[in-house]
Image (tube, rainbow, N blue to C red; front, side):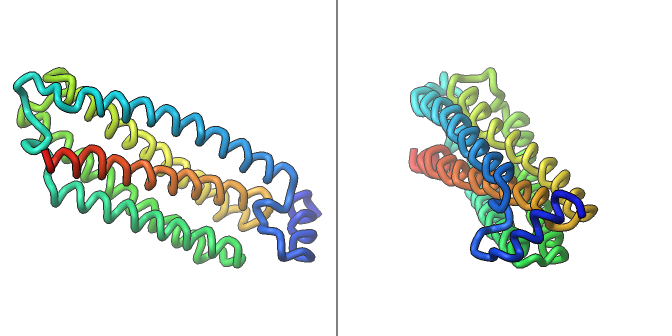
Length: 209
C-alpha cells in the first residue's frame, strides 16, 4: 500500500474531514496557497490603484467609451462566471469521489477559460487596429496592464488546470491529487473575483464616462 493509499484509507474512516485536508502536507499546501493569494491580491490592488489615477489621462486619444464593446466584455464576464461555477462542480465531484465527473468539469472549465481568452485577445487586437495602443496614452497603458495581467493569470490557470487534469486521469482521486484540485479551484475563483472588479471599475465606469 502506497502512502497516498494509506492516507485515503484513513480518510474513508473519517468522512467529516475533506480529502484535501486529510493529510498535514495537504493542509499546509492549501494554507501556503492562501498566503500566496494575499500577495497576488496586493499586486492587483496596486495596478487597480494605478488605473484609477490614470483613468482620465487619455492624451486626446481613444477614451473608454470609444473602445469598450458592451457585448464583448459582457460575454467575457458571463463565460468566466460560468467557469467558476463549473470549477465548483468539479470540486464537489472530487469530494464525492467521482473521477469521471471531476475530469469532465475540469475540461469544461478549461474550454470556458480558453473561450474567455479568445474574446479578450480579439478585443485587444481590435483596439490596436483602431489605434488604441499601449503607448498612445497613460489610460491605455494602465488598461492593457491591468486587463492583460489578469489575462496572463487566466492563461497560467488554464495550463495549471491541464496539468492537474492529467494527474487525476492517471492517478485518480487521492490525498495527493485532491489538494491540487482544490488549490487550482481556489485560484480560478480568485481570478473570477478579480474580473468582477475589472468589469465594474474598468468597463462599467468607463461606459458611464
